[in-house]
Image 1 (spheres, rainbow, N blue to C red):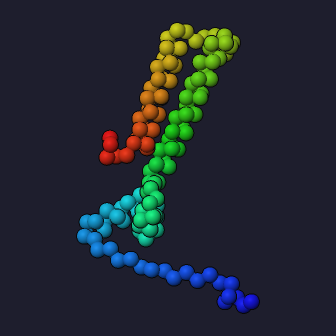
Image 2 (image 1 turned 30 degrees about the vertical axis):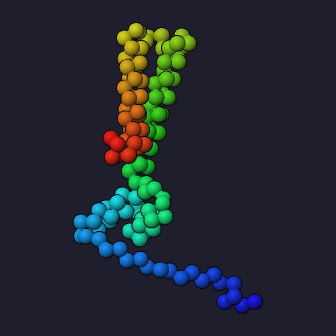
Image 3 (image 1 turned 45 degrees about the vertical axis):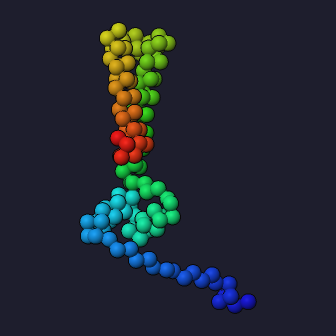
Length: 123
């Protein structure tokens, strides 16, 4: 058996799609946002894949950071609730401020999740 017999040949077809200049610019912007070349972006969309923006990845990283903040705040609250000596100086005002910060951080997290999960057209 020769190398030629074992090679898989793939014949590429090129599709032509007429677009207006402003449509071409929008497609290029969308491809950049997905961090893909235009051809790959269009091929993926044409095959039914959902375009994912690199901005989504940034938002997910931001969610991870906020989640870490919540973990640290929760840790402080847990120390206080267990009467840990390190929190002996925490008064009611400090705990209320901590609870407020947790609530604010959760609101921030929910806002980002809405932006990532709900399509722009539905916002």
